[in-house]
Image 1 (spheres, rainbow, N blue to C red):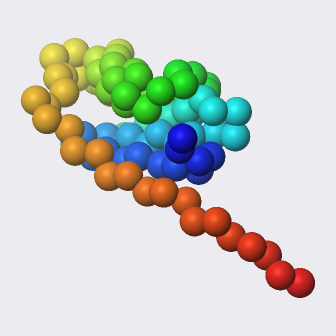
Image 2: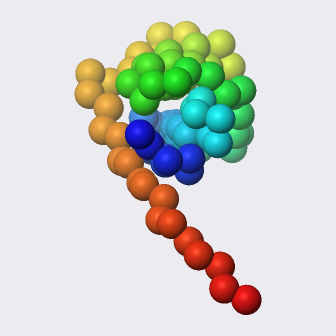
Length: 93
């Protein structure tokens, strides 16, 4: 089971995609448009990591075609995801 805060990042030019596991077990997505200087925050959805990655890529394609100004934009054949696992932190006072 992946902990809340588990994060995956992918760079799909000109976009950066971040998905992060929330405390309720769903995944949130942030889409960063480096070309236009925009950030899109998607509502939490999906419970599985593979489904969250797939939905993020579908959303990225939709964003680029509708809002990014490139109706012919396609995802590359391979997308490399970098994964980050949160550390347990104990705060001492």
